[in-house]
Length: 420
Ligand SMILES: [Zn+2]
Ligand SMILES: [Zn+2]
Image (tube, rainbow, N blue to C red):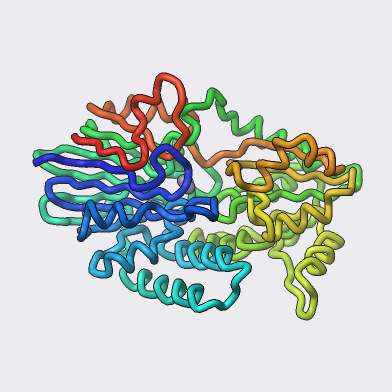
């Protein structure tokens, strides 16, 4: 029997992750994300439906919206199909998808379409089957096992066992480095027949030096507060924000930065509260607090008030998407030459953050300091090569990246049919 792998979205791009596997006659769909662009936000569901009128399993690897933001629309197309994911991802997913819907209808609040999406999300959540890492999910001729992928809380890789002990390994977003809130990825001991590997940083020569990068990050915070400025840290709500708030707390404890008040705002505040429950550990303390909310003030007035009280604001979105809290904070700080905005991660080309970092004109309108420090939850190229070496696959395809150079020929593009 011929086995197939087809990226429906998220092949030669970061966004709208959605991968169809047809293995020993079983149809398994991994992830259903969204793109950052408003023009074409979803994977090509029509194409998917034509290839697979029915699905045997849907797996969601983790709760970043580029992997789960359209799960309710997908599930509506396949209402009989269970959605497998980890306990942690199941909890985070509800909040993340709801927020993605809210952002999408930001100019069309309370429309019928918006409410329909919340209803579809409720229905999709009722189809979620929570599984522990390493549980065996039996689909008949095929078995699925979720492996810890590091990256963010609850993130998994998907091992698909088929035929006479063959293994297909889909890495999902993966990190071999230990982080403060999550351990490193674990890999199966068997040799993989097919490895489908994320390549966010495969095409970049950048080597992550976490300790050095963290020290530089704290140094920027320190010098900003010492000259009397405020620090804005736009951060991804899930994973990055929690890592940074722990880094700031540790930095204060170790005397690398002075004791400062940090407010955590936007979706990052809500995700941090879920993280506290899931990790059974407090992330907030006397210095690092959820940003207060006020009745009867406009959002901009709330931001002004928070900037008066706190030395540092950690807020979503990480890419300064227009209309989000971090974008409003950045406008308020733009003219203050003592203050700093510190970016810490991936920036989509459509985002205001990307434009700011890449346009001299925009940059010159900002009097505050703009810095970019690299704190990543993805493997760099060296780590990805380590995964390749460990799994020693017969065949490898890269996904979730922008291919260039020689390695391009190992990259699976959207709609490409891979036979194995
Ligand atoms: Zn991710
Ligand atoms: Zn991703």
